[in-house]
Amino acid sequence: MPQLATDPTMMALVAVLAYLLGSVPFGMIITRALGLGDLRAIGSGNIGATNVLRTGNKAAAAATLILDAAKGGVAVLIARAVFGPDAAQVAAFAAFIGHLYPVWLRFQGGKGVATFLGTLLALAWPVGLASCAAWAVAAALGRISSLAALVAAASSTIWMLAFGRGDLMLLGVVLTLLVFWRHKANITRLRAGTEPRIGKKT
Image (tube, rainbow, N blue to C red; front, side, top):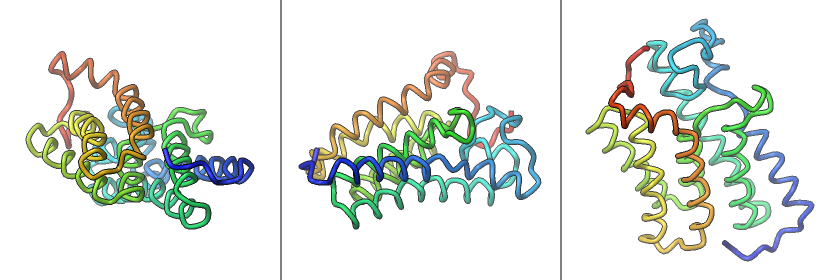
């Protein structure tokens, strides 16, 4: 962790604003705006890009992926620019929690992979790029989004060590554990061999 230098009141404000930004459900907003239906009633019911892809609209899925990643990254960049690296890590955590447990959806949100990667890219772009590459390789080889997400999350702390970013390790471990927790049903299906592949609608 970096040295805690930001005033606690300001840090609390950073956390609240980052949470609210992270909780914006772009997947639901985009699918409704395009008349693609209620995302909660499609596929897995998840609000992320993988489930948006099950509507058959690749552009909507891409937009969801970019915006979900951007909300984490923007929260980090603003917090770091205004307050410093300690606030950036708090913003990363709060934005991630916002996506997982958004107040607007009764705290029933997504699994956080895009937001996780977006925060990593903003916190330390080499770590973020390496984690994205791990996701891409796993997705290309296995064609299973959840497996790729788990590989990317699990590898992130390795990249932090490799690129000399030990200051991010505590945050990285916590976010990784949350990614695995949110994917617990996927892990069960992976073990059973019943997890759907990328692009499958149901």
